[in-house]
Amino acid sequence: MDEGSTKIMTYTSHYSVLKKECLDSMYADWEESNEENLLFADLTFGGGGHSLAIVERDKRANLISFDQDPDALANGRKLIKEKGFEDRHHLVDSNFCHFGEVVKGQYQELVDKCGGFSAILMDLGVSSHHFDEGNRGFSFRVDAPLDMRMDSDNDEVPTAQHIVNTYSEIELERIFKEFGEEKFSKRIAKKIAEQREEKPIETTFELAELVKYCYPIKLRYGRINPATKTFQALRIEVNRELHVLSEVIPQIIPLLKINGKICVISFHSLEDRIVKHEFKKIEKNSVDSEDEIYEVVTKKPIVPGEVELDENPRSRSAKLRVIKRVSERKVKNKYAKFSTVK
Image (tube, one colour):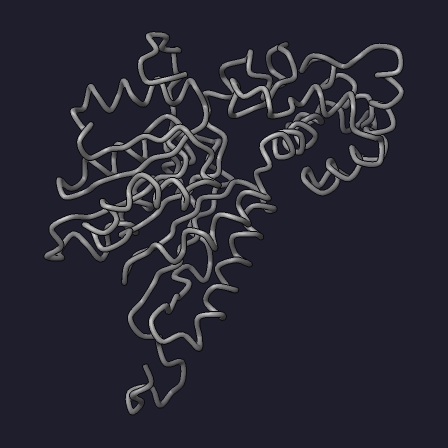
């Protein structure tokens, strides 16, 4: 959907997870600074809660937001115009895996003006809109075509339906086990292979029912729907979420200015594991660097408090990790006060 389109989808309400914690971290080194211009990025605009709050917090703030979802883009452009932020808030139609390339191609002058990024936010969660907008195929609560594409108008991205009906049984088992941590992955993949021989599996209800009967009877009607892990795995495969995450963190880290941070919110253990590993690797690899030194700020991830969990139970699995570019590394020994190590 281009900027001139008049089609604005109804975008459902969105709770911005860990918003205060993110903004406090992103602005911690800048609110009392003498910087004339600040530059931030939000790699997943979604419902716009984090992005708009970043721009609203300080008039010096410039923001580049990314999203590939047509609904989010149309809604975002409307909100940015209503807020009068067009001169400071730039919304890009792209997967964030192209962040470095887009920034260098379109916003290098702004980056130079601001001396680099003050902070970059990655909220890896799927927007509530995707679950609530049933026809997108993300949820088993509504019967809809098995789609699950974030970039829903990109026909080059294979849908979940395509994956379910064309991937080999072995590949399906691998996806369910690796991306869904599904202990009944073999049974589910086998049943899918058998079912599609008779008739293609086309809708969310068809798949959810199939998965349910792959579970033992005592586990079919618990608090968590048996199809949850299978749907998660398919969504990750469709949108290449883990692959993109591994690619983008090393790509964006050099764009930070001194005291700049990367803040990442993850929602399941696979994502959190990648973020934790990448941050540790970046910190370790910067040990011998003269001018690009990074420190992991969050030795343990920041998680939502009781108030947020009461307001938004979907926040329960969220974890925030932060890494920071610093001018000199901390000396981690008891003689630190006598040391001049830089």
